[in-house]
Length: 413
Image (cartoon, rainbow, N blue to C red; front, side):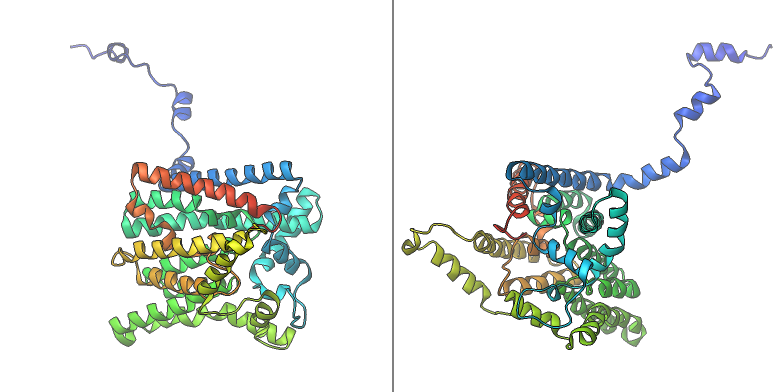
C-alpha cells in the first residue's frame, strides 16, 4: 500500500503548513510571555491606579488653567513646599518658635535630592522644579507599590475578588491624592504595608528593616515599633526562646527614628527638636480631647451669632466628617477581626489613636488613608450596585477635594 501523501492530508484537513517566519511571529518571545503571565494577577491594580492618577493630573491641569497656577506648584502644595526646602537647604541648627522644616522627617527629602539633580538635568528646569518632579516620581512609584500590597493583603484576608474591589476603593479614596503630590506617605505607606505582610509571614529581619526605614520617613510610622514588638511577643509566647529571631523586628524598627534623634541632638542641640518644632511652630501636640475641641470649633462657626460671617473653615468640616467615617470603618473592620492579622489591626488602632488625639490636624483624608485596613474593609461588604455607588462617590470626592487642595490654603490634603 502506497504511503499517504502529506499534501493530501493537509488538503483534507484544510490546514496549510505553517511557514517558519509566520510561526515565529505567532508565538510571542518567551521573555514577553513570562512578563505577561507575571503581570496578569496585578494588571487590574496597575490599570486602576494609573487611571486615578490621570484623573488627578487632569484636575490639576484644569485647576491651573482656571485659576492661573502652575501645575508643578499645585502638586507640591502644602507640605511638599517644605519637603523641597529640606532637600534644598537642610534643617536649621536651632529650634525656632515658628513654623520650620524641623517639623518634617528627613528620609523623603534625602531621596529627592539626588533624583532632583537628575530631573533638573533631564528637563533643563531649575533645581527646585527638579526636586518637585523627583518627589512626584518617588510618591507615584510608591503609590503603585502600595496598591499592589493592598491587593495582596486584602486577598489574603478575604479572597481575590475582595482584593480587586479593595484596590478600586483604595485608589479612589480621597486621601490617595498624596500619591500624586510631594508627600512622604507615598514611601512610608508601602513600607508599613510591606512590614505588616512580612510580620504575617514571620520574616522578622525584613519586617524590621522596612519598619526602620519607615520610621525615618513619617512620625506616624513609629506605630510600627509597637506592631513589631507585639508580633514578636506573640511569637515568643507561642514558640518560646526558639523564636528569639523575632526580636530582630522591634530592635531594627527604631533605627530610623533613633538615627534622626541622634542627628537632631548633634545638629540642633536636642534629640527632641522635632517635637518642639511641632509644638511651638505648628501648634501640634497630644490632646486627648482633640475631637471635643474640633466639634466645639465647628459648632461655633455655624451658630446663629456668626451668620454675619458665614465662611467656615473647611478643614473643620472635613475633619468632623473624617471622625464619623473613621468610626464607621473601624466598626466594619472589627466585625471581621478574626480574618485580619493582629499586626494590621494594631497598626489601624495605633494610627486611629494618633488621628483623634492630634490637636492641629483632624482625621482628614490623608491621615485616614494611613489606616488602610479600615479604608479597604468596605470592599468586603459591597457588591455590584453598592460598590458602584460607593466608588462613584469616592471618585467625586477625590477630584473635588483635590481641586481645593492643589491651589491655595483652602483645604489640607
